[in-house]
Image 1 (cartoon, rainbow, N blue to C red):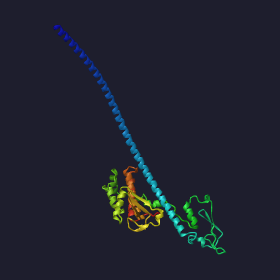
Image 2: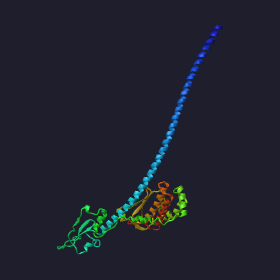
Image 3: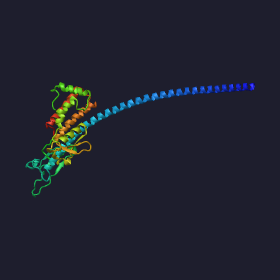
Image 4: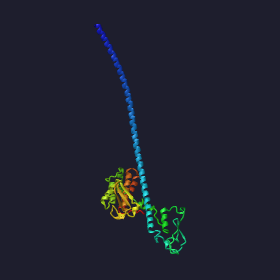
Length: 362
């Protein structure tokens, strides 16, 4: 029994040694696996840090590109608004030409010619002569249909020279006007002096007001449309408020709100409605020839306004447009140049609120 018990102890000892050896091998394998996993975690951490850095750089570049696109869009918008203003001026000139042409057509027709506009109907001499007017040739002996020996008027033959013989600088409408009214020159061309009258005084007779300039510089440091600043508060009380103060006070408040929110639309009345556009101005309540109408917002109603009301609203809109450009950083002039431009716009509002404005014919 002793031998048996000792052999059993030896076997148990061998079994324990083998088990501890297996456990030791498993422990070594687990340690190696943990080391591999630590290396993999470290590699993944480096990849994550690299991706985060690239994401930050990409986000910064995207923001920079977005700001650049916004600046370019603002510059293009300013250029488009300038072109639109020039186009509107050209449209006004063309409308003036068409109006003059319609007036001539209405006052002198082939069936009922106006003898004051056609002096050749009253002249008795040189009936066989030809007269050149505006590139056209008329037979004066037959103009107006003088009665012949048979007592019946003959049609007046008109011969027109080829197109290349006409004056190259004369507009088509003016050529037609000169053809209708021979011997009379009608000038409806755009005059560059209109812009000079609009600009007003020169730049050699002005002096900066220190108080106004200080208020402007303080506002320019943090430009905003908040009227609580001394700069805008003064302009609201001295120019904007009086300029947009009309007889119809409720509509005046709506117009001012639309101008401030940049949601006001001014458009000319269609030519088909122009001759029937003599109605009461929606703002002043006075009967005038309303060539334009306004709309407040995208879904508002149209209100017909007189030229004086349009000039007052336009002057305020020009001021808000310029200070918005300053706020957006689109104006690259120095502070003094900006100040004088603001003073010019204030002067336009002052002149407009006193009732002075430029007509469509200059």
